[in-house]
Image (cartoon, rainbow, N blue to C red; front, side):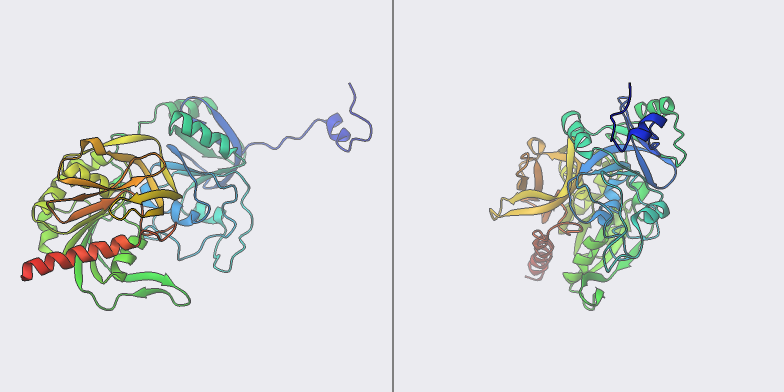
Length: 406
C-alpha cells in the first residue's frame, strides 16, 4: 500500500505519524478514560465531575468554595482567554488553595487578551494546585453526565505522559459518593472576622462601607466574597463566624439578622452540627436569610428534607420564577443537592422555582422572619436580576425592629 501521490502528508505516512502524546487523563469511575493535554498543577486529584454552562466568570467559578471536591467541566469551549486578575477571586482568603479539584476544557488556553489580566490561567491553576486537562470533547462528556449523573473520577497531569491507567480506574471506582460528605471544613473560616468591603465599581474598584444601620452575623459554610460585599452595600455591619459557632456565641454578638451562607457537600451531613444552631436562632425569631447550602439547611431546620440531584444545576443562565411577584429571573446556580418541596411543613411557603426542571429554589416561613433561596443572587458570576433579595433581607430586619419598638 502506498500513500497517494501529491499528498503533502505522504512523507509522514511513510515514516509513521508522530501522534502527540496525552499529558493528562480523566478517568471516570465506570472505567471510561478521556485523554487530553495537561495544564495547571502536575498532579492527580479525585473528585465528582459536574458541568457548568456559564460563558463568563470562570475565575469566580473556580474559586467558589461550593465546588469543593468537584472537577468542573466547562461547556463553553474558550476558557482562559481573558486571563485572571486580583479582583475576581471569590474565596475570602485569596491566598488559600481552592476547593475545586480539577478543570476540564475543550480548547487549548490562549494568551490572555484583556486589560485586567494579571496572569495566565495555566500559571494561576498551578499556584492554586488545580489540575487541568484540555482537548476534551466536553459536549460528549456533558451528555454523559446528563444521561447518567455526575460521576466520580480522577484527573491526572504528567508532562511525560506516564499514567498507570489501571490504578487510576481502581482509585476512581473506590471514591465515596458526594452524598453523606461534610466538605464545609475544607473551605470555611475557622475564626471570626469583620467585613466592610463593598462591590466593585468603575473606576475606583472595591469600596468600603462607611455607615451601617443593621448588624448581621454571617455563618460561614464556604461564603463567597461578593455575598458579603452586597450585605455591606445594603448597610449591614457584617460579622462572619465559623460554621461551628454556637447559638450562644452568635446571640452574644447581638445581631439584627443572621445570614446562612453557601457551601459544598451534603447539607444533611453539615446539618448534623449546623441545624440545631439554626433551629435555636429561628426560635428567637431573628430575621434569617439563607443562600444555597444555607437554603438547604434552613429547610432541614424546619423539618424538610434534601435530595441528591442527578446532574445538579451549575451555570449563569438558569431561569427562576419568584412566585411572590410572578417575575422570572435569570440567575447563577451551583448545587448538586436540592430541597424536596414535598417534605416542607405547613409553615413554609415555596417562593421560587426553577423553570428548567421545577425544582425548589426558595422558601419563606409564615411564622418566623426567615427566607432563603437556592440560587446565587450575588451574581459572581452571573446576572444581577436577584440583587433585590438583599434589600428584602434588610426590609425584614427593619420590620422586626419596628415591631419591637411599637
